[in-house]
Length: 220
Image (cartoon, rainbow, N blue to C red):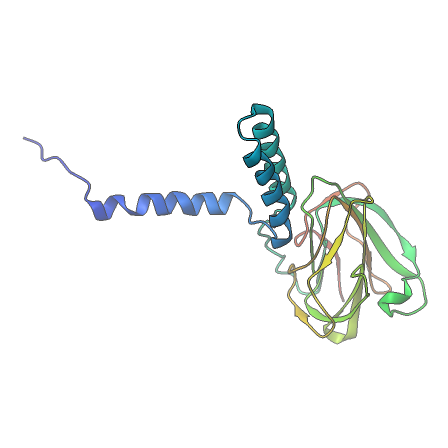
């Protein structure tokens, strides 16, 4: 007679932990700035729980807000000198422009890549290079990062609408890693990336970018 194999408790226990690990890997974490918004939506549904429309609306709103405030895990390219896109969005313009005074860069035309992030793209902004924060404007809209060899990358983020707000998580003198979250702009944004003179821009107009991964240029 064939011997039956029976799972023991020690063999069954890891299954829930394994499933929880899969869920954590599949569902992106949420930036802390989004928690009050999600909590507010759920609170609205809690007080109107007896009404089906209120319950449904609150759950949909909470889910949508959690999606927008998500902070997906990203793997920066292992390419020396790579400058990556700071946000998920679309390459809206590639030109040359004089950077704003807040950045403290030279008063000359510099290569500029403009990326537009919609209200459905993640709101987090990521450091395009590893280096030190050299300057941050008072309203947090302009950030200058000094990479090794005194190369500087300027970032200017503008909310897409009147409801947008900028939350800057870094200050001058702080070190940042490539792809690290440094700011958050709610409900869509436009980001201008000022690059060193002579930079060769890799993306094309209209191309989708992945924040922290898509290479804009490679520093020589």
